Structures are given as C-alpha cells and as structure tokens.
Length: 312
Image (cartoon, rainbow, N blue to C red):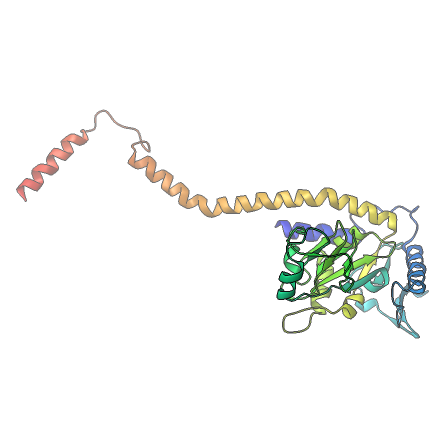
C-alpha cells in the first residue's frame, strides 16, 4: 500500500465515522446545523452574506429514507449518498456550512508595477503559492495595500483550494493569516464548524470523486454554484474535534512512511546495478574468491604471453 492509498483509507474512515468512537453524550449534528442556519440568518441581516435563494435542508424521514427539501420541493436523495453515516451525524451541502467565494485576478503587468516588492499589506496568494504538500508560500514578493478594497480577502483559519486548472481539487491548505488571493482559488469560511475537519474532508477520495464529477470546461474547473451543492457528512462538533486530533496524529506518520517508501523504491531500482558493479569490482581486485598459494603466479602467465607474441 502506498502512502497516498493509506492516507485515503484513513480519511475515508474519518468521514464515515469509523476513525474515532461516537459519544452518546455529544450534541447531535442536527443541533449544530440548526445553529449554523441561525448564524447564517444573522449574517444575512448584517449584510455580510447573501440569502440562499433555495435553501437546502436534508433530513431522515419516518420511513428512514433521506430527503432533501429545497425551497418548496422535497425529494428522496438516498441514491446520491456515497456511504452510510452514524445516526447522530447528518448530511448537508457545502454551501450550508460555509461561505464559498473565489478571489481576485491580477494581470502580470499590474502585479509587477503596483504590488511587487512592497513591504506592507496583505500577502497575495496565487495557485502556484499553494503546494501539493498543503503548505502556503506567503512571502512571494507580492502584497496588496490594506487600503485597496477591490480584492477579496480570505480570513485567517479559512480553507483555500484550487478550483480551476491542472491542480484543481488537489492544492488545499489552511491560511494562518488574512490574505488576498487569486481567482482560481476558492475560499471556504465555515459557520460554527471545524475548519480543519472541512480541510481534511476536501482531501478525501469521496470529495475528490464528487469534485471530478462536477468539473467542466477545457482547462477543467468547478464553479462556486456546483461546489455549494457538493455533499459532505456532518459529525457532531465534539466528534469533529476528536477526528481532527486523531488525523493530526496519524497523517504525519503516513507522511514519514511515504518518505521511507520513496527511499526504498529508489534503493530497489538502483540496487541490482549497484550490486553487479560491486561484485565485479571485488572480482578484479582479487577479493571475490580465495587465492591459492599453489597457483602459478601471474608473472609466469605474462612471460608465456610475451613468448607467444614473439613467435607471432
């Protein structure tokens, strides 16, 4: 099993409620979702977010079938759910638990003339600044003055993910400060929800499959509208924190395993040739087999060779 396969397996266990035990004393995820709905309503009244035109509510019916009410329409969605979840968990759409928005593009000339080499301001993060190792390079030489208000800001502790191009769905990280960011990146700002649980969910194979299913366009990308509709399993908030804690313990070990695996693969690839060269070197240095004192010396062999050459 490769390190990536092991990571995928661990993340899958996590988002199916099989990585840490459930606690019957945890407040159910349904209560958390109700608080999130109230929080969103408050933010709408404050003008900080827009009201959902057709809000989605997913629930289990008395017949044990999962339904989704969108506006005035209610329909069964069991065939859309990728796996079973524990009873105190819930399903929701991404747009129900987080505010999603893309950043602001800058053309290269504007970037060089106005924002490169500045000492102060928000770091400007482009797709290239988010690594496949989930690390953000902040000090890239580009900063946006705080007095300029045309740029979208990803707040500290929000999740950034590339949603367009070759690295779409694969470059994901968590910000450790407020930043401005490019239009090929999407910012996820959770409402009363663990940003790290969301961060790990976005790395799962289950999310990756749904992301790919919604990818369109020549260069490949997923729109905010479609991202908002992707399903995710919601554990109770206390369990989210337990899952994150467990993952933060296990995944560094998986990363270490991956590095050792690369070293072993390199060794396996180079060892046969290196062994052959070593054996041949031992042979021509007289260290591969034992010397026999009764052997005719090589000097006598060389003398016979000289005599043979003379006759020729």
